[in-house]
Image: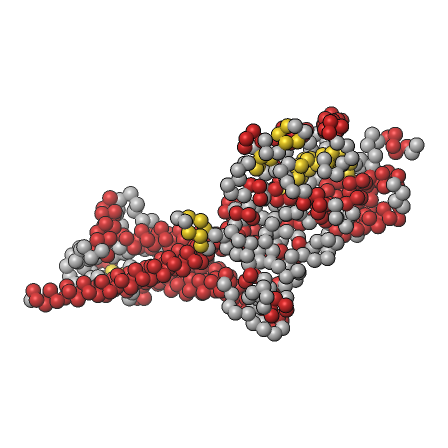
Length: 367
Length: 244
């Protein structure tokens, strides 16, 4: 038995990696890759290695509320770092009912065990959100409404990661009229630090990158005012889009099947929401950096933005305004109002001319 | 007209902000007039370029590096936006240091009963129910109300939403983002909502400007006082000698 295992009640990342037969050389390579993925300089490779050798693996409970599992599907495709490295080496993923081996009472017992052993030490990752209508009956975990589980676990956790647009904003199940009253994490749990990692799903490398950052530096990443990690969500798709030169030049796809679409011009006119969407798709891309929607010829639909289901068509850059039984975008309404004003002015001017003509006639008669 | 008379005409503004006289009065001082026309030009540039940012011109062909059309349109939008914003700040400053008429744009006497009575009178004048218009040294009360509720609030709204959108391009670490976007975007929902409202704001101002120009020209022709020339040379002149 190595001394390190006696000294520390929880194995360090390095211990686990060595136990799994990963060489020191591969470990250092992994640290370099992680430093690169986080946008850190070479000096941080040593720091990451040091942290991995000395820090205990943080227990993580990954709960699933109302969701479609697309976040998990994305997560397991992470290439840098590999998802298996994150799950098996970096964190101690104690509970994740979708991918864990245990089931039933055995699985649920792990939650109580983790709370007991690591009270205030573990991370809570939430995929999906919490329905509150009908006493929370729209999502039942182990025979009880999901909000019982999340409230219990949240009380004892250190911090919460809200995976995906569901947990961050609400997403499709919270779209109008939101019949189940699906509630994003930050509106349910207000006394714990929450990191939002929105996207439907979020990018795999963003998910693993957030976890790696927290383990390496033992702190939350810098968040913006809405609680998203700045390192991945501080810029819009548009700001780093490889088609941006076509936007600046004024070269647009006018219709999806036109010549400009073949040439790969900017998708702004066919409703790309890149200019209003904060995410890292145009930098990190998907599936080991293979592609992302705009590269595949389709505009961004803004899946990482708050309430993106309720902002009208995926192919409109302005939100539809609903009211009085009409649906129109801001420009259509504005054009109609300005047109009506113009017509009213024309009528009023004609009436003014008539009335002044009449008045001057009367004046002449009076004289 | 002697200087003393002119000063007394300006100094004797009743609390309702309504005043009438038979003497020609120097109403709009030079900086205010300059602001008016620079501001008008800025709004024209903002509206045209803004519309073209939302609904771009037909695509250009050839190398992307041969063109910078959207870039230029956006550049002129931003330049005009700065002129518009700095102009409004200057105009607010002038409300403090300029003559008493300079305050009227920002301080409609909303609590004055006579003022509201005058608005009713003006509405009747526009509805052809009153044959002779009244004389007003400054803005007529209805104009004053429209300028405050549509132009002043509309301009401030456009400056804040506009700079929030500008801040998005400047980046989250810029001071623009902290000053405008960080709190304003979540308030509206998300970036797309701010875009939508910024468009609505443009049409709101365009509607105001249409009414403003029409009313100014109509009053210039039909009322008993000068309108358009007053914003050019500063003097309010009268077409007749009758009081009120």
